[in-house]
Amino acid sequence: MTISTRMLVVLVLSILSLAPARGEDAADPAQAEKKYALDDMTRLDGPGEYLLQGDAHLLAGEYDRALAAYRAALVERPGSSKALEKLADAQMAAGHDEEAARLYRQLLTADGSDGSYTLGVLYERQGMLDEAEKQFRQAVGEHLGEARRHLADIYTLRGNLPEAARQYRELLLERPDNPLLHFKLARVHVSGQNHGAAIAEYLETIRLAPGNIEAHRELAALYLKGGKREEAAAHYRAVLLQNEKDLPARSILTSLYVRMRQHQELFLHLKRSAELFPDDPDSHFRLGLMYDFRKEYEASISRYRQALALKSNYAKALKGLGKVYLRLGDRERAQEYLLAAQKADPDLAGTGELLSELRRDQDRAARQKRLSQMARKKGKKHLQRGKGVRGKKSVGKSSRKKHKKSVGKPAKTKRKQKGKSKSKGKAQKR
Image (cartoon, rainbow, N blue to C red; front, side, top):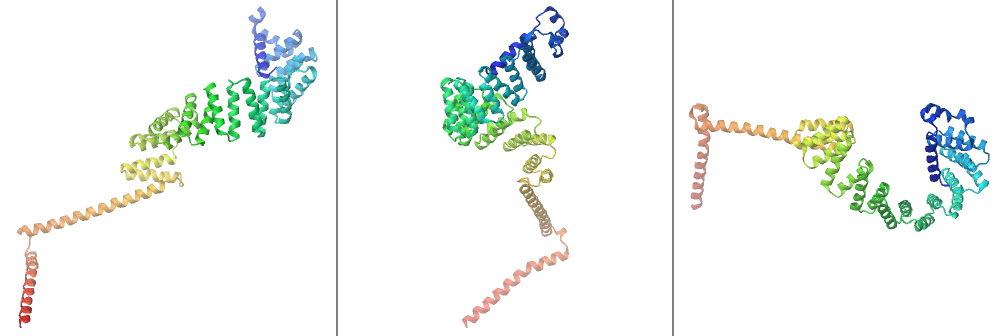
């Protein structure tokens, strides 16, 4: 009997055992509870009652009580394979693998039960792969498909990929519509670097089980490795359709949108991330970057401030604010936030360059201011001189004399030059 079958039986029997069989039990739950208590086992009729009690305790996770009930059943009927099997199952559920394995071996020698599969699972759990393989091979001989699957898993763990693939393919001949088998075979192909075959098996898995998130995720990673960004993005979106808060898929999809320059998709994606994770400063920071890119500076400032409200020393958000204020021409605030970013994280890339740019900008503004002041002063002086020439009242005697002298000088020099040229001409004639 397989583990799944045993658990189904346990569930059914436990429901039956918990149902009130007598009027007094139904009327008085406390009395019914007392009847099934371990210290009142002597009142129960036969090993069957002990088994039912053990099933109920096992289902409730009360392993010690379940083990005690199954042992009582064995005392009542020594050598009962049913009681021994249930005791072994309880030991396995409680994590007592060595004791469970001993009981399963006892079952195998006692009545030739099909415990090979369960014993193989126990050995596999303990890392005893050689012993597990031996038991699974025996179970495969009895046409147990699950044993073949575990055998394939063991070959995969050992790195014997061709044999693992063969086992999965043989299983698929019997169960071609089993998505788990296609999924496991895909993983074997990935380990063997046979990416084409792996993609085919992942696609078949998704066709049979569209809700298999891991298949979508692993196929997306495979497409990404092969440079197929569009296909990878499609499968990461499929992951998010089933679990919007899957952070690894959301983060990789963000990166893909950036690489593919799909800015509108990226904007909507980041906006949704901020809605899903309102307490995550990174989500607000990334959306702030996107608003900055779109030149929506007020919205960008708002998102950066939200990130800082959640994380006061968030260097990237401080730098983002400084950058936005620098673009807006608010040098004082830009310097304040950029210096705060540098203090929060001295190694943050880009902060030093922005501060240098800010200083250059401040120097240019200072030079421009000085030049403007000088130009204004020169303009005033020129204006004052112009008024002195045109307006007699504003010009004094001394200034008029200077003006006459300065005006007369060029005329004298001209006359002297003319006289010299005439004398030179006469001398040449002579």
